[in-house]
Amino acid sequence: MTFQDHFSSRATLYAAARPTYPPALFARLAALCPGHELAWDCGTGNGQAALGLVRHFRSVLATDPSTAQIAGAPPHARIALRVRPESVTGLPPACVDLVTAAQAAHWFDLHAFYQEARRVLRPGGILAIWSYGLCSVSFTIDEILNRFYATIIHPFWPPERRYVEAGYQTLPFPFSEVPFPWPVMEERWTLRDLGAYLETWSAVIAYTRVNGTDPIPQLLDILGPMWGPEHEPKLVRWKLAGRITKL
View 1 (cartoon, helix red, strand yellow):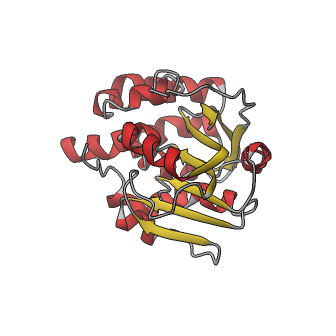
View 2 (tube, helix red, strand yellow; view 1 turned 135 degrees about the vertical axis):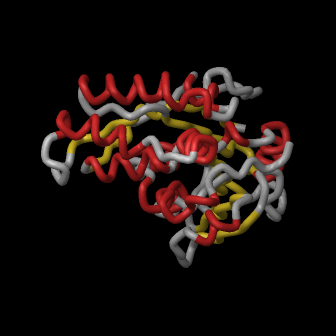
């Protein structure tokens, strides 16, 4: 399985416009772990999850196959950023307390990733993968966003998007699972912030490439009257969903 590079072309925007995972997520994950020495965040992008993990672990290895994404990650003394595929950590066996993949596992060669996770995790170590789908703002805004998603850009999603739409429940996960209370991810965004986030969707990037026009400005024009003042922040929410095991 070759690396599918959907995001390097907009790595800078991705770093600025993607939502931030809630601190409660990482606190709950850390509470499950046998120790707090080392976490591996695979498919880190530009380090959103790694920054959350480093609050609970002495050090974090953050890997991604995209050089552009890694280059956009903020430096941190206790986060080692490496350009590597999901099958390679460069770590010795049984040294990791937690392996995570945030909004990334659906792009992986899962067999290779799981094999490496098994190799590097300590006995009792935790493997956690999660994703998030459409955001929610209000009934009227959600209705427009859902219609845009279903009728305009849906044909432009890669096939792996189906795993995100199913909350990762159809993603192969050959482990005994641990129940986990997934928190809700929230941001207070302006309409411009929402538009920047939508520009990072791989389907929007593909639509623009194929059609020669960006669909987001027209969508924001439609949403504008429902939003109110352009600079007025609104609460934007995403449901997190995923799979967790103790190995």
